[in-house]
Image (cartoon, rainbow, N blue to C red; front, side, top):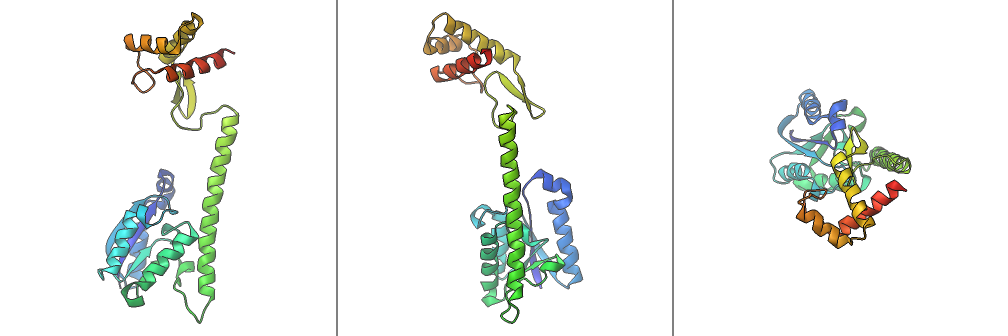
Length: 236
């Protein structure tokens, strides 16, 4: 059969662990050659496996080729490359199998996923396929939970969990460190507040002195208020 190959990664970590797009393509080509198939095109995505077709340009193009008759089916390294969400997985399979008057195919190179298509004489096929899909879905949810818990514990310890550091701090080696220049400005703001200046007066003064805000823009009273509050908390 003439097949289009589909490969997907989400993170650089997957690339480093041997799940790179190139490694997946190589595995698909070896499998196709061993089973007498021909890879006529390759499509790739670097997105989450939970996203539907609207966010998966590579998968959409692969399915479009099958729909247009340019390929007879799709080959993937492993079923979870199609989706790590059971509902998305089943929807994609259903769409492929309806193509080419019901003769569209989707193949996995993994031996345990060799028989994906539903068979009324073997209901165990659907059971095993959906079990594999449910396991992938569970693994994704477990990873997400661990990440949330890790961020929560780090937040409780006062650690850096990502995002733009507040004024006066900077990210270094995944930890927060003092930003000396911004720290001096924050101390200056605190001193001006102690002298009785309003937030608006301080923001006007900083803009007149051409002191850059966090992202190089203009100072506003609300921004000054936040910096003053953080400075007071640090001093307290």
